[in-house]
Image (cartoon, rainbow over all chains, first blue to last red; front, side):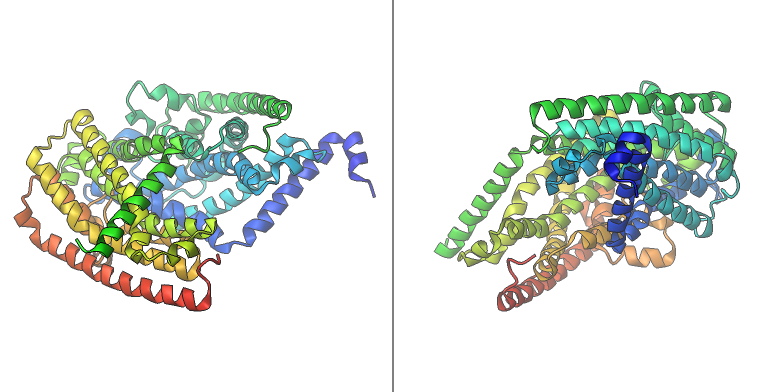
Length: 286
Length: 280
């Protein structure tokens, strides 16, 4: 059997991938110990966002139809619109809360320094959290989508499958964003408000809950600078037949560019922050 | 004033000052108190714009169901009430839990002060934040969205808030009892907040709920609080016209306070007998 150190020196990529997967399995095992928390992954978006939003939408119904939404987006399927949005909302939440804020939890538990003393790279430790977070988030999103179709009459069937690559590209972009936010979490001593508010703004400006065209014109450039805006738009275009924000080809190109750029930038910023904290000896301070 | 009552009032002030001093140590929380009262309702205002589009029929449908054309005012008031309710639900229970974790709860219960001081003293500092939040919401809807609110309307809203206080603080005290009994309260708070968000009409008029949903809504105090606030501030109703709603809110509040007092005494006795006051 190959020893870990040997594997690390001979096949560093394979060793890091194994470490990331081991970390993800550890996180998933811990998540299984708190089944109520897992149930909450589904319930919380339902009662905190989806149901209030659906009922607000119902207040504007004319003859049982979302005429206003149809005018702006080309679809009156309010439930489909919102339940597809929450798929991307889950991705954003994973980057902010699992990848980034997870470091804070490690700091509080006093396990960050010991973990970073192992031969595994720090960015792999963050990646492991991202993998487990994505698995939980995707499972919760699928359950939510099922609820949307079965209970709220969302008609999203096959179109979601065609747009799956958009979700995958958005997930890569969010890995990069997660690294960027994780760098901030390492620096800020009390990052709760920072993570909570930036996660909220990211979701809002991505158009998870409403078409970004209703944002004031001076705020719309922010929406167009986020990869998730294109992911959620493409999901809706293919699944609901909504009017795209831009030419879909351009949106695919933007998603691809974001996916390749942000992950490089995010990783570099994270490594630099981590190095600076090692030099200053502030890794364990919080 | 009799000496024991005077001592309790002083202890109350001391508990409030202590919490205020702790709050000041975490300036990031101040940002939160500025950010959320604006950002959360604003996101729903944008969502409402997405739902209304340029369709006059959709806007008319909203006005017919909610009784007002002030969409921003409607949503800001609903979510301001939600944030206030959240603060109070978390308040007394979290304060006791924090004392438990710090290991100071037993010492606190050894003092001769009234249990009301222990329960609500730390929450007093949150009243300042509640007033701050309503002020921010008021300024935003008046300046940014051009909602007209007069002095007498503010006065009526203040009366509605005061009548709502027993119900909300009764709920907060009930949660505090749960903390003493079971130690952890966050899952329950989440569930109750979810119940309120789904049924009490923070972002919608309860008329859009199915009949069974309306029945649940009408049994929950926040429904009356939010509805009354909207009526006095957005529709210009006088207090006389909402007396039935206020009477129900007050009755629910007094009932909840009564239940909370009994529950708190029982759980305290249970915790003292079992020696579980400091265990968590």
